[in-house]
Amino acid sequence: MSKQNRSQKNPVSLSAALMLLLVSVLLLLPPGKGGAGEKFTVGEVEDVILMPWGVKLPARIDTGAATSSLDARELTVKNNIAEFRLPKKYGNLQLRLPVTEWQKIRSADFKERRPVVKITFCMGPKLIHTQVTLNDRSTVRYPLIIGRDVLKDNFVVDCMHSNCLSPSCPEVPSP
Amino acid sequence: MDRWLCLFLLSVLASFFLFTHEMVSAAEKVTIGTIEDVLLLPWEVKLPARIDTGAAKSSLDAREIEVKEDRVEFKLPRKYGGLQLRLPIVEWRHVRTPEGLERRPVVELEICLGSKRFRTLVNLTDRSMVKYPLILGRNFLKESFLVDVKLRRTAKPNCRGIP
Image 1: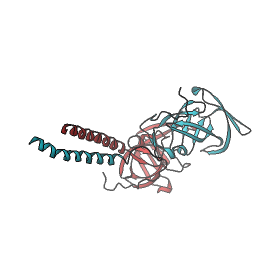
Image 2: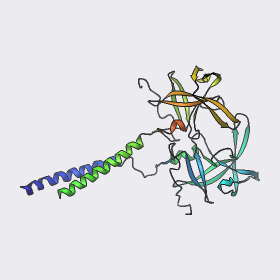
Image 3: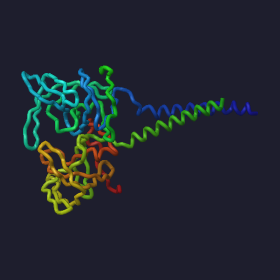
């Protein structure tokens, strides 16, 4: 009797299990990660690594800024080469980079022209090549502002958090 | 045999619930773009707002600001109707600007974004130089929003009949 019961039950529970498995797999698949369009969530502040020098900088993630900008001290431009130092707090490294263009800044009281250079940095798993405007940002808390130009392709911003992603590009040498 | 099937079923169910729970908590945050239209309540004045994770606090373009004891009187920009408002001052904020330190009155506003109402603090300042009359900063965004700068105007504001 009991043997007969079991042989009847087995196919039922087996098919139920398979059905459930199928349903759960189907439900889980669409929002799953992976694929070319994957976006990474970043916080209001993220650490990035400036390449190829390997300097770590905290960056303000700023959806209010169209472009990105870098805190450059003792900035001079000669023959279209910008020479400047990173803030002391972040190693004071001296850099020399070609000026790719000039950006006109208009604010309430003054007009300014700022040099733009190309830099490469690692944010999360992404190596990013972008233009940044250089100016002395000593009055502001973060040495790098990351604007919409960088954010638009690979990132969404969640303000509740800081440092959601640690820099993990394969190009960054391990410390 | 039956016991193994039960165990298998249970584990499938458990992982299923775990994952769906994760999905729900991620979905609670609404993704918005860089510019969103909002309604200022109860006046239903429509304003485009810049969604700005670089701003700690929200701010509103206020013209002809006059402080009268614990209240502040101001006008919205003419482009958005020029409505005159009188609101209690909640606090004063010192804001660092390229031009120096500024003291701004802070008021509480109710706004409609998408189909939800929100109360938020905004500081008042003459923003006639800037393109958008309302900046929504991190104090507003941090609870319930994700920002995707590839998007703009993700939802029309409609809070009629929503308490």
